[in-house]
Image 1: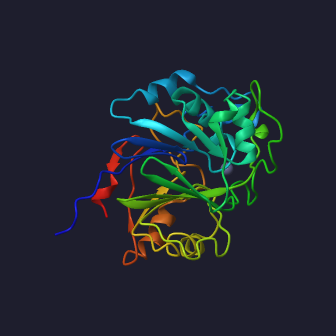
Image 2: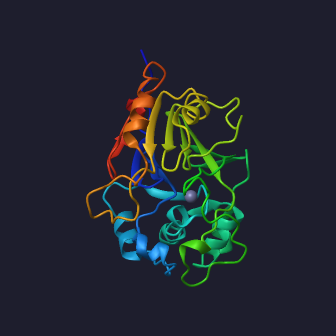
Image 3: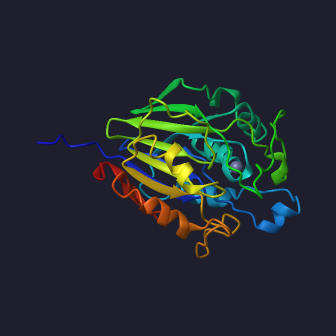
Length: 282
Ligand SMILES: [Zn+2]
């Protein structure tokens, strides 16, 4: 008889934001819910984290003790809100040197910051986290936007262009009930997943290049059983409004191409805010 698995839950927050929980602890990755409009970003206006919305999100019934907030890279749609989630929850904030500088400006206390070391395991409750060197997708007209690093604490308000990329990571989360890999930006490095497997892959598909090549180098390489597309929603539109796809994301083409690998992995589309018991999938 198969052994009963401890619960493992997954909630997509929109963009590359996810909450992963067991019955004791929660881990947030790239939480981003403020979603200022396109005009504010294009005009270079100061971006304002919506602290009320963050507070409200964190007090939803059933949300477990958030122990860590992880950042995959320091663009605003991954790192504007993340330090405020850590501030509210006293969770450990883990990211690149640039992400830590964004957090220092909030300010987050130095004791709550941890630099992500590539390939080193970090234990949080029953979770083991590993940051893997990755690459950003060619998200804007074939180029990576806001390249560079954040070299000073981002005190006060800042525009999108101040949230420079920094180091890009994928994050492997290992739990007794399954492994989840967060691939938040649609680039990859050849061989980055040599020797690594994951049951579930959260696959950022906005700004990807060639879909088949991307699938071959990420979920197929990882021997994923389940692939969940993320970061395809139009994150310039408030979460209070009906979700729209990012312009140019070509979701249908992604579904068609991924559908050809139905014998290799199952494609799952989940809704923003829906809490899935992913241990039951495996
Ligand atoms: Zn980005």
